[in-house]
Structure formats: C-alpha cells, structure tokens
Length: 223
Image (cartoon, rainbow, N blue to C red; front, top):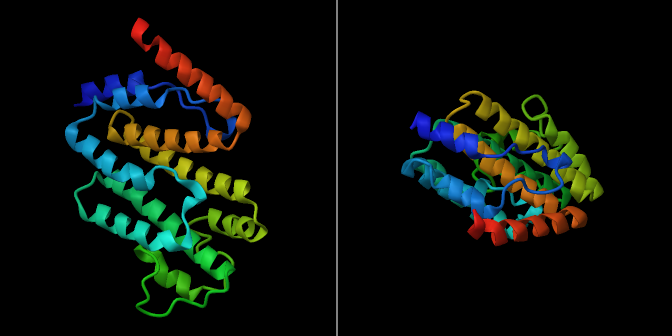
C-alpha cells in the first residue's frame, strides 16, 4: 500500500491555496480516476465522508441542520481512519457552532438541557456561554469570533473565507503528520472541494475553469 499511495500522491498536481487559485488544477473526471488507486477500505470511507465533509459552504439551512447532524453521527459510528475521524469531528464542531451562531442571531433562547440541536462535545459549552460572542471557544477555535461578526454583518463571502481558512489549515496539519498515506489523499480531496466551491463564486475564474474542463475532456482520447 505505501508504494501505491506514493504513486497516487505523486500523480496529484500541486493544489494552490483557494484564495490565490484561478482554476482547478485537475478536473473532477481525472481526480476520480486517480482515486481508483485507493485501497478499497479507504475509498469506501472517503465516499461515505465526502458528501458531508466535502465543502458545501453556507448551503446549510435551519431545517437541514438536524438531518445533516444525524448523518454525521451515523458516519462516526462506523470504522474510520482516526485522522479522517479527527477532521470529521472538526467539521462537526464547525457545523454545530454555525448552527448556534445562526440561532442566536435569529433570537433563539439558550438551548435547554436534553434539547437535541448539535453534535459533539461543544453543545454544553456553547449553551453555558450562549451570550459570549465566541461561546467561550476562542482558545480552541480562533475563527469563531470572526465568524460571528461576519454572520451578524451579513458578509457571506468573508464568513465563507474564514471557515474555509480554518478547515484548510486543519487538513494541512493532518496531511503533514503522514506525508505518504491516506491522510494526504483525503486532505487533497477536501481541499479540492473547497477550491471548487470558492471558484464558483468568482465569475472570471469559473469561466476559466469551464474552459479548462472542456479542454481536458476533449483531449482525453488523444493521450
């Protein structure tokens, strides 16, 4: 497996930081082709995690929070690479915190005991610090206070950037711990998802991305 993963990782292009990117360095089709080199167990874990962990930005709504959180809980109950589990927990904390920030901004009261509104170990702490701007999470997650400010101001792009920056940094840390393993691959995939989401909001970059995708597809048969 290490040799196969070394080949897989070597086949992946350099991924630019999302704020500096003008286009995706690899098309969805070619990325999926590379992922066929994954061990079946790792491929299955990635396939399960990606619909939830892969970046969906601020598409979550009040009505969908509970459903998404249930899916996170179901995912965590199965066997998972422990570093993938760590990132899933991080994203679960992001989702729970954003649900709390949105609820507070809409005037919701402090969640009562036994109320099911979030997942993970943050729900009790958030409830205890409901009226604190960062829910008392500043030492653990420095992005929370900025996220609260941008949400309150209605600055969606800056909020998205703040959340992406935190997730990108977390993935980089996980990948650095095991530079030739599954961690590097899932970090690349989740960063690629973020990059695609970010470029979608940039009309000029989106046009360039579409042009490159067309070129990649039309040249596939000539390699």
